[in-house]
Length: 312
Image 1 (spheres, helix red, strand yellow):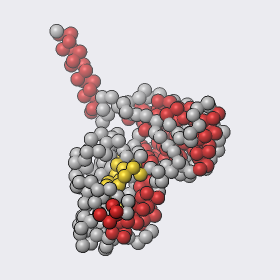
Image 2: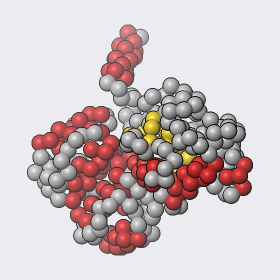
Image 3: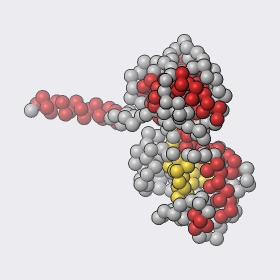
């Protein structure tokens, strides 16, 4: 009995240490290589493009998965005997993930540095040289992810880094942060979802209708968010409708029935969200009957005052 008590006490102490470090007891147990396909954007696409180049299938690292990237993925898949479907899934990422360490250089290191900067704010020079600074950033990430801390980026570190969510960048004049349920840290999502929304917001800002207010997305490592039935896998982001005075970032929150609701501008926003993620918008919940009739949004209870964008 005393032996059992000691085991339980030790387990509790270890669990406390993990929780006290900000990590769950099974850190990143849900980590998996992301899916990337035609129409995707973002940091993971940049990494994909650099890794393709490292394997002899050069493609511009512009962060947009277009026809050129798809062709390079197909060529790489054929060279490795993989299903040549042009989609970067687990098998393709696994074959692309080159193990790198201090002293290495080249496109694979550039991919690594881009990921560390975007997802962990590492502040590295993206120069493709694996030096002491990159080693420190890798070791810091490995500790953060609950991995073995050796400074070497092998398949497991690649998988956890590519899976890790990215924080939305609230550029001046393009987006503002809103947290209606007090979830101040809930502005994380997959790299693809973040980049696709940021691209839509940047284009929308040029229409003269003000910045885009962004509500809850997800937490850094996913999980339940108070006040939401989803938003736990980094693919759902809430945004506010647009006001006729373009003051949606500073004025009172509105619904589609409000006198200051700007349907035309909100329609433009929805169209931009869809245009910047072709084939990757699963749905947009918002109860404006006109936009629903146009096939732009879908009715759902409690979505009169915000648009719920779900990426796929």
